[in-house]
Amino acid sequence: MSQTNEQIKEKEKELMSHKLIEVMRKSSQGGLTGLDNLGNTCFMNSVLQCLANTEPLTKYFLFDIHQLHLNPKN
Image (spheres, rainbow, N blue to C red):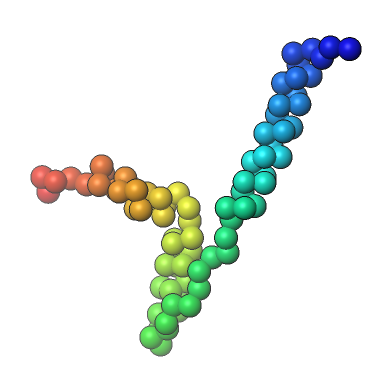
């Protein structure tokens, strides 16, 4: 019994979602902790940890994408 194109596409979607979940589980790591508090810096430390563990923002700086948005004439 041959499968229709829709059945094949549905099966491909299902396999891709399982692969995506597997890749995300393997590449996902817990966040980093352990910044030193200097008395009244706990709020700043928590904000920095949140920003550092925001993947798109981290990639923005690690891959020098921010350089494209700098104004060299200013």
